[in-house]
Image 1: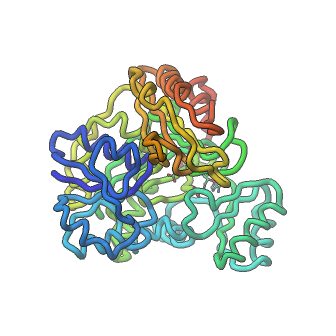
Image 2: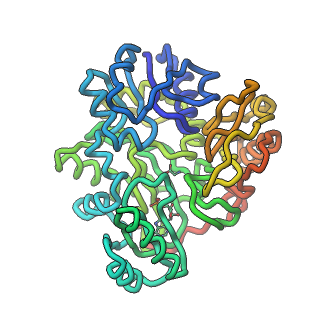
Length: 428
Ligand code: AMP
Ligand code: GLY
């Protein structure tokens, strides 16, 4: 198979590497890719969010196009590619509304009977103030559109919550204000061909910029998988309560969901609750999850794209643990500084059990690697235990230098120390 991957982040680099491990994949291309992806496969300088340039991709003769990020999906790129006769892994624009609109997702969840936080959509400051007072602190205010993980403010400061709502209104948007969900978070990726659903291994992401979950939300600062602290029936519970009902409801509405449904979940004392859906693989969870996947990825994504997930055998996973740590540019997430020189990547990759996946990287005037985005790299460690995987990832991080860069030092630490508690109560 020849496969084209659209996107330029760490998630896409992880997908490219996993596709290259699939013996049935003959060739992988990426568009636009990044400096690291370009070291592994041919890259093409096209705007991945521009549905009108699909003919360029048709000429490549790809058997499958994998759409990585949400922006092209929300822009209808997968519809345009399908209309041009290509086979695509990624939902239609209509199905991508599950991520692009938080109020749409709430409607679908209500219709499907899926447990989620109680919420109100608000269009004015008066409505927002009333919703904040109804739910009380901590306050959760979400921009009702795509915001790269940065449109959500969780705070106990009512003034700050209202200010975020006001800023969203001023930008012409609306907000969703919802009840605060207490408990550990889990990301579960579920492949769907529109009808059938196959779960990958659960992962945990670290959304805040600072150690100890402090500071603003980011796109994600690190992740690990598997999650040994989860109840044994967790994945089946999510499939039964969340994924299958949502996939069935989307099909009933005439907008079947095909691609990967990212279920962002909280394990609360009252059971599993959906925090959000995304319609693509998570970043940086994918870097950890795919590092352990032994089932060939190309075949799997092709089966999802062509309605052939029924009867698939269980996926095959390495027994190893994977941890990835994101190195972000100075100033991330507010105002990332671009152009800083990046060194030590090769030395880190030479370590046993360590791989370095590129996100915001580019090539500087002297041909060396430079930071070209907020999240620059994800350093992945694989090990026999979570502690070993963490140690490897951080050993790799220690060899890499980028002036002013930041990373969290506590990715997967609580899990390693056995400090994650699943709230007592019925997981239902
Ligand atoms: P979202 O973009 O909806 O995933 O939100 C980003 C992050 O904000 C989540 O990963 C959570 O850490 C946090 N968050 C979102 N909604 C809630 C909620 N209802 N209760 C607690 N935390 C939340
Ligand atoms: N890791 C969060 C996301 O991909 O949205």
